[in-house]
Image 1 (tube, helix red, strand yellow):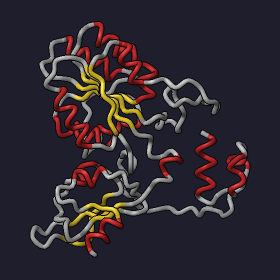
Image 2 (cartoon, helix red, strand yellow; image 1 turned 120 degrees about the vertical axis):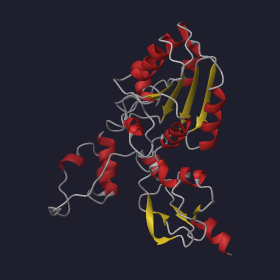
Image 3 (cartoon, one colour; image 1 turned 90 degrees about the vertical axis):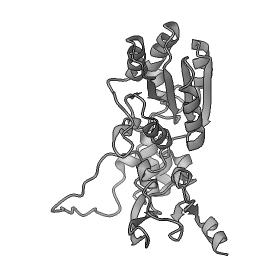
Image 4 (tube, one colour; image 1 turned 30 degrees about the horizontal axis):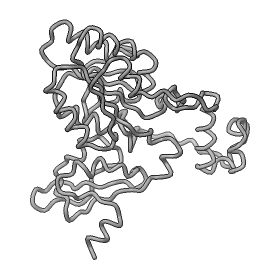
Length: 302
């Protein structure tokens, strides 16, 4: 995506600001400084992980707690299969999440299946499978994770963004209206960062024997508009006891502190301010309210 490349290059200081309006500048302008080649004797282990601030993280955290069969799909959210989230049992091809979940239900699986699919993949091949769920009266719960962009392949727009790949404004497909038109009666849209809303909704729906669609709504953390909102959180060391619950959301910004809890001799949590986006998912899951913004920490100290 040339737009993203130009923005990132200007932001990193590799291109002068005026080149941000020139589509060819990102590919023609020379780098201001040569980047030295450094060969490490041993590279650190870098397992794939959802980005800091990813709006899908809260959904997978809740799914990991529910212990139900999770049928996944193709997208950056496929990383929900990776520990510590480990919240995906199948992943075949684009659009297969809903179809596999319905197939399991149709085959008589007594466990309630949950299908997870991104907005772009839903537009690509998920609509047909959801129609099949309605037509054949399945009880699949489908989670459409709407981050308003095709993140995995380079931040391309999709039919739900209201912008064409050429950057022209166009009709914006309303996912909720589309789902209702297909015939799904139980539909709900929630803020993707709202951990409690996602958990409460899914637990209630697991008791109801009918198809349902939950739309988790928040823009990808990597789009420029979201990056302008970044404000790092901090861990209040006096309140943290090293319980490790915040580590279970799998955020790269949460790291181990050199300080240890005096009672349990466990390393405390810390947050890398260069990575944190301030999404507050970790703050919501912390049982000791130890994760706060700087002004909140100062207010408590006053």
